[in-house]
Image (cartoon, rainbow, N blue to C red):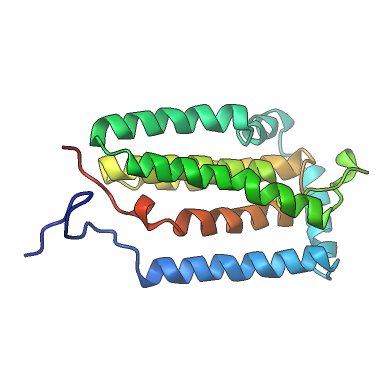
Length: 213
């Protein structure tokens, strides 16, 4: 019988990053590259993307809940939630490396999104025109990485998947809210989700549960 190892010791603790993680990272990278190329070259995908965005923006989806979920992508909301999760997991496990890795991962969001937005200069939906710099969505990336890190860290303690399921549902609501309120096009949100998946899956340290001392 192989016993699960703890942080800094020999052994493994499932789930161990392997082929599924590599496949998902590669898939996210390919989709993100394709979407970025479409935005950079004003490709044919943008026309149906804008039609879909306009349909969602003018749909019967209530504006108040859409605005609430869109606001969850603000740094002022996501960062305190992540900080609370970091503090709790560090206290429970007595390990600071996962928290440090999470902080570095979160710091990469503005470092990557900002230059991409400036370089691609995609125009926003009609309410935001003539402003540019909407791809990829900073709010969608902040929510996906911030709450995704919370789910991964909490999974290290509780070994349950409810946090991951809740994170997926929450980010879907954030993305829909951003499009419904006219803050972003659908491709902006999807591109951010792919970029976020690349960040989250590229740090195996976040995928290895740890045990407290």
